[in-house]
Image 1 (cartoon, rainbow, N blue to C red):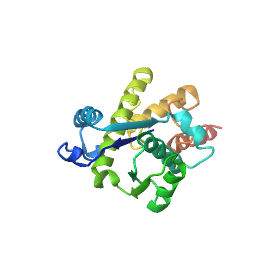
Image 2 (cartoon, rainbow, N blue to C red):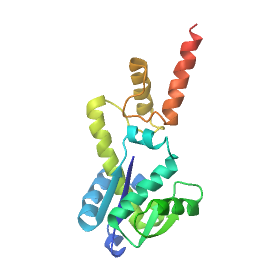
Image 3 (tube, one colour):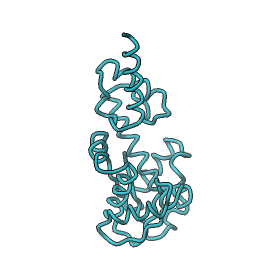
Image 4 (cartoon, rainbow, N blue to C red):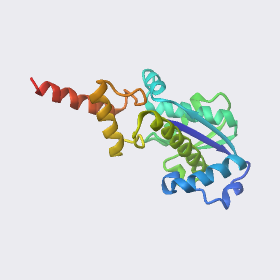
Length: 196
């Protein structure tokens, strides 16, 4: 998981760049904007690998883990105001979660689809997505075709199935606490029980 923050003195800095939610941009356009954003803005990222997420999940929900990561990147930039994309159904509760993890005071504006509403959050989504894609590319060099790592990706599901078939455990690059992994393991357990 990658969480990013982009700090700007004024949103005018982003006005003519064409930043949008990273999901609607091509990989090539994200890469182009990534380079520009790194030059023009202050940028902070936090990366949590699968094992770190599994450890964190023993003490908190995934939403709380994301809120903590949001707080970490905000603290790195130390703004007085930060916009965050709320991953909790309750945007106010999510803002409070982020605030509870902050070391420095900061006003938090928490919104659903903030990456579509606020250019600075769009810029952060681009930084996070490019950083994540680069991590996935590095992992693919070691593990082969792993796909995007998203549960909707058939390549990812095929990789997980094949790896678990061969090793009887999930790969170290997959969260054991991920519902997708749990479902695959449960299905394989049911299949092997049916063999008796």
